[in-house]
Image 1 (tube, rainbow over the protein chains, first blue to last red):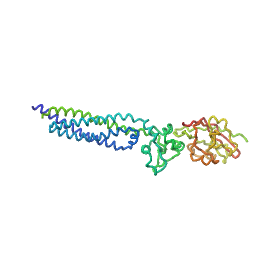
Image 2 (cartoon, one colour; image 1 turned 30 degrees about the horizontal axis):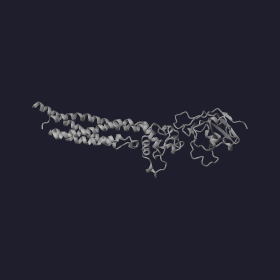
Image 3 (spheres, rainbow over the protein chains, first blue to last red; image 1 turned 90 degrees about the horizontal axis):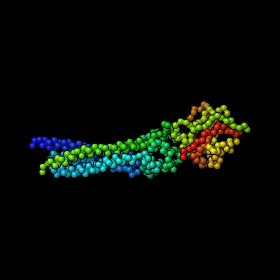
Image 4 (cartoon, chains in turn cyan, yellow; image 1 turned 120 degrees about the vertical axis):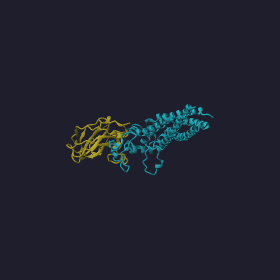
Length: 259
Length: 153
């Protein structure tokens, strides 16, 4: 009949549109997760060392889910246009599996964020940071945590987690190996000139403002981490909401298609 | 010999915001300026006396340069003198440079010679300091003792 035919056509149109959106979101999700996995801020090592790197696992899952969404959306469009029950059934089953994976990834990213506190990084920094004095020969032996922190402090012009006083208030591996008189805080906390040497080492040791970095690095760590976690989690949840609606529509359509 | 003149200056840790003014083994002092000019000759030397706060009352000024207690003997004599500098460094005409840092020299103390050593302090203190002007015949002038300075643990 004309009216239910129209209804079916409208439903088909909506489903195709829904699948197109899913396909594009899949590409976007893949791109976003590849960006996060590439670790542009060099913070992965810090998390891996504390065994809290699950947000990277969530991003990896996101990459594959994005591809799967793209492929499944194409399958869905073909199935809807051809009104083929088998194709639609395959589409629904695979989409449900992908849905489950994406749900896991989003929940992981959202909950892992709670583990990233200042104290976690402070403890790791105090235990593992050990600036080596030997210049280039032993560089391959320098701890990854040390290298990461040196890069952090040099590029973000910061020192310690909450500030240089972290090195004064707490005992650390660094303090065991470097005298307090020469190194109240690591020399990477000093303002550097173009050659990578402190502009004024005595001023830096005394804490004269302008010769040392007085703010902590926690913002430089937590900022990108939060963006990463929220990006994976909430974009994923948004995709899941949309996909849920499209799935419901597809199941309804599947039940209406004649053999 | 006449007792040294007592100058009305109290050494102190610089009041400004310097994060490193007191660390676990060093501390900074405001640089005195225009304090010693009236009482000292150009040939005199200004020393910094560092003593544990409970030993500052029993400290006796050394009668000559040879009797100056050194950094290496801090644990036994509970005081030492360091930062021997010419009076001209603290004159009124010199531009006021920032601070003096006590304990900043990590290379001395190994030779075991007679040179005054400004090595890092091994105990958190508290310490009291005063400036002592030594001439050829002994102490010429001294400042008051500072308030106790406690280092970071």
